[in-house]
Amino acid sequence: MRFYSTNSPLSFTSLADAIMKSLPEDNGLFMPETIPALSPEFFENIERSSFSEIAFEVAKQYLSPDLSLKEIREITDDAINFPVPLVELEKGTFMLELFHGPTLAFKDVGARFMSRTMALLNKNQSKKLTILVATSGDTGSAVANGFYKVEGIEVIILYPSGKVSPLQEKQLTTLGGNITALEIKGTFDDCQRMVKLAFLDTSLREKYRLSSANSINIARLIPQSFYYFDAFRQLKDKSAPVYFSVPSGNFGNLTAGLLAKRMGLPIAAFIASTNENNSVPRYLNSGEYEPTHTIATISNAMDVGAPSNFARMNHLYHESVDEMRSDITGYYFSDTDTRSEMINTYSRYRYMLDPHAAVGLLGWKEFKKSAPDHAQGIVLETAHPTKFIDVVKETLNIEPEIPKALADLITLEKKSVLMGPEYEGLKSFLMSR
Image 1 (tube, rainbow, N blue to C red):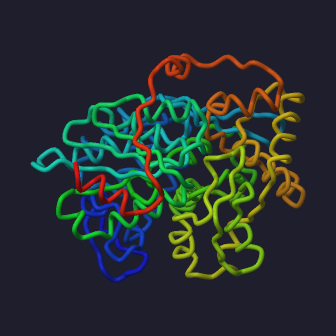
Image 2 (tube, rainbow, N blue to C red):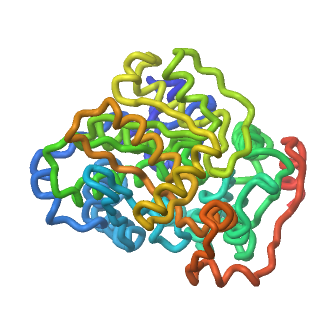
Image 3 (spheres, one colour):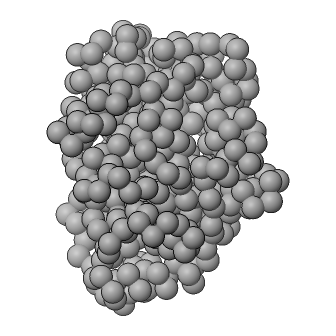
C-alpha cells in the first residue's frame, strides 16, 4: 500500500518511507492511499478469533505485500500478547481496560507493534535510527519500553517538566541504554513543536536518520485500531448500536477508531471526551477550529491545546464540520467534574477509574441522555489508575495497591537532561552528540 501526506494528497510514498520518515517534508501527516474494508465473514466469525489474530487480519491490510504474511504474523503475535478486557459497569456501559500491557497504558499496543515493525524495516541499515518523541505521559513510557535495547535504534523522549505523574516520569527516565529523556521546561505542546521543527530541519537530517513514535507515525496509528475490533468481539449483544467514548488529547486514539469504522466495524458514533483542553469539542460546537495554549489538569496525558491528529480527522471529513459531526460528538469537563465521577464510580461499583477514563465515562453519560434506549457505550480506560496515584489517593481517600511493574520503579534513579522550550536548545544538544 502507498501513503500520502494530508498536505499533498496526490503525492505517494512507500510503507517503509512513511513509517521511517514519520512526518512528511511538507509538515502534513501520512495517510493510507485507501482504507481497506474487511469482509463480512471476518465480522461474522470474529468471536472465534483471539486479539492477536484480529490484529493480524487488520495489520495485513496495510502492511502486505511490503512485509510478508509471516513477518506480519510474527509482529502481531509478539506485540499483542496481553488482553484488553471489556468490563460491564452496568447494563449498556462498558470499560475497555487497555492497561494490561508492560507499562500499564493503552499505548503499549501501538508502541510494541511499531517497535517491532521499525526494527524489521531497519535491520539492513548501517546508520543508526534516532526516534524523537514528545510525550504528555504514557507515550514516553510505552515507547521507551517498546524500543529498549532494540539494536540500531535510539530513542530521545521530550516531556514537560512537572507535568507528568511521578510514576510516569520514572518509567521514561530510568531505563538508560538507548533511551534518553529530555525534561523540557514547558508544556507538551512545546515538546511537540520542538520535535516537528527537528523533522523539518535539513541540517539535522543530514546528521541523523530521524523518525517519531508519536501517533503522528502511521505505525502507531494503525495498531491503535486493533482494540476497537476486539471490544466488539467481546460484546454479547452485537445487534444494538455501539458508541465509543474516547478520552482525547492528541486524538490519535480517536483517529484510529475512525479507521476501524471505515474498515467496516459497526460503530454508531464516537464521543470525543476532553478535559479543559477542548479545541476539538469547541470546533464541533462552533465550526471554528481555534487551538489554544495548554491548560494543566489532573488528566495530564490529555493536556494538549493543539492536537496533531486533528489534521487527519479534518482530512477524513473533507474539512467539513458537518460531516465530522455525523460521526463525532464532543464534550469537555473540569477537574471538579472528573473527581466527582471518580468518586461516584468507586462508590457505586467499587471500580477505580484513572482521571482520563473518568472524563471518558462522563462523556458517555452526557451522550447517553439523547442516545437510543438500547445503545451500548464503550469507554476506553487508557491507563491503570495507580499511574496517577496521587490524584487517586486524594480523590478517593484510599491507598490503592501499586502493581509490581510500577512499585519496582520507585527506588530507581531518574536520569534526564533539563532544557528550555526553545528549539535551538534541542538542536544544539543533538548536533553536539
